[in-house]
Amino acid sequence: MDKNFAWPSGKELEVLRYLQSEVAGMYGLQLVEKSNGAIGRSSVYILLSRLEEKGYVIRTVPTAANHPGLPRPVYRISGLGKQALAIAEAQGFGFAGARS
Amino acid sequence: MKNRFDDGRYIKCDHQLTVSVTVDPSDDRKVLIEYVVPRRFQQEYLFVEVPTKSVKLIKPPKLYWDWLARRLMSPSQYKKLCEPHIADMHAQYFCCINKGDEVGARWAVIRGNVYAVPSWAWGALASLLLWLKHMVSH
Image (cartoon, rainbow over all chains, first blue to last red; front, side, top):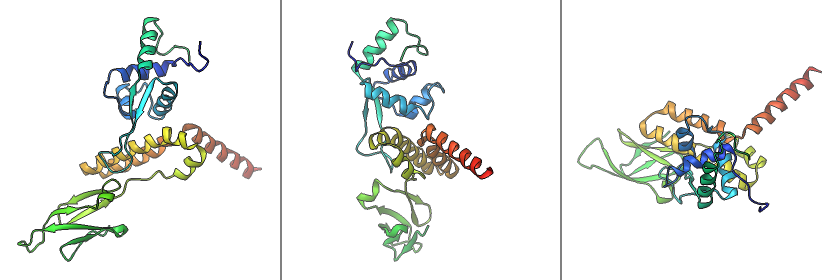
């Protein structure tokens, strides 16, 4: 197996599952709201940045926000992320207990 | 904030910005009907129209300990972990301002500042305070 390959952890798989349900992508706060507290606001961007480093998530930042200030990044699941999620679901990995 | 009418054509805001406005000349009360904000400020400030004859200039809120976060994190970490929290804070803040909910806007700033700092930084601060307390007591 490739040394750089890192399997997503249980929480990361949960994030991928929520991201897969939204084709257009999601903001970090939307993810927190959708998870009903399972993913905390303080940890959501840590999880998303790890997933981005592993290649499971694509982050896009709009050039201009629809409000003054910084534009909010939008996160979308990548092809690799979809594959990892499909494998995890097929092999019956529990979302809370998958190995990291 | 000083947002007074100045000779019927300009509103002087704080930060020395001038915003050109159009007023209804037939009305003695000079009712504001249109204002034009310089394009470069449109991304940085929110101009809220006040029912009387002025516009209100609102800057996006800052992260109080931005200087500390920039020193503790690498630029890429800051971009990935801190900036999204600031962007969320700005979005929530301006959403509340547009609704006229000033309490909600302040709360959004407080929450944004708390969440933007990683939990280990809070832990480091608590450890430092405990250490200082220990040093003072001995």
